[in-house]
Amino acid sequence: MHGENNFKILNTSKISSARRGVLSTSHGDIQTPFFMPIATKGAVKTLSSFDMENLKAQILLSNTYHLYLRPGMEVIKNFGGLHKFMDWPGPILTDSGGYQVFSLASRRKITEEGAEFASHIDGSKHLLTPELSMDVQQNLGSDMVMVLDECTPPDYDEKTLNNSIIRTVRWAERSKVHFEQNLNTSNNPGALLFGINQGATDRNLRVRHALDLINIGFDGYAIGGLSVGEPFEEACGVLEVLHPVLPADKPRYFMGGAKPHEIVAYVKRGVDMMDCVLPSRNARHGLLYRFVHEDLSRPDFYETIHITNSKYAIEQTPLSADGDELSRYSFAYLHHLFSVQEMLAYRLATMVNIKFYLELMARLRSGIEQGAL
Image (cartoon, rainbow, N blue to C red; front, top):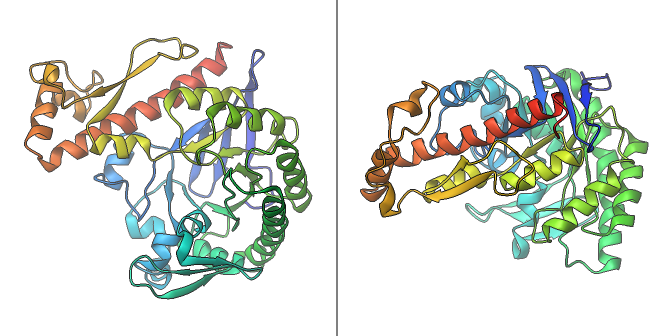
């Protein structure tokens, strides 16, 4: 429930800043650290909610911007929320829609009121305000709601970046006020509200903005505006300065892309939750992840293979050794499906990669428990 202590830390590492915990939501507890597969428009591409249950995904992430435009919040509201609309029993996190709006570049205009934008579908004009973002997410029945923020790329000049942060703080305040006013009429009165830290790679500005958000008070804190082109080392540096500043008893969410070895690094720096499009996107291009070493501290603990490579044409190794659906098919069969552009190829490949990411998180949790991370 909003405003309550929803996050319990079970273990803390003695050799890093990694934490092992449990985050409670209206749709069940989530073991942390965890990964959120991307169900942008209400589905992980090529997979069903049933598939995600079988893969043991704890939570999905959906996109406010896309669902606001299609099918529209009234349709989903009338179903009683996104969980019922897509028949997903577990928790759902929705972003604010801000990142997608800001990525439209020439199609949007930022004002104090919000973000004006033209739909990428039909060019229709919209104004995304902090209040509208809360309305949409509460109609969706999200378990974790994100405040509207302005995603600040690393090439912003100092003055523009500072003005953006000041505006983002005011948007966060407006988001919280509106969120709390409408809790009782929401499709999920037990939803949690997250603030989003911005500031590009300016560490002093990051800390200042974090303190502003803490003063407002949120159920969790996201670190946004990274994975947008800055060096990996810069992202790690930002996490290191934020670690002693952010409340230890609140979950920390690293927003955006992360390769497997980057996830390990972020978890070691205190991150509890993250998302990424890479496992599903790469799968559709025939790029698959698989473990090579047990030791996750090695940067080469995994490999990325190109299933379309001719060497996999005769490989009889099953896609999984766990007795699940993937164990029925070989790498050679998946190679064949890609070579003839059979639709099943994309589904199986996506399952392989999602399973890898979820297994990585399970190994990280185990490593923290055992004192190895």
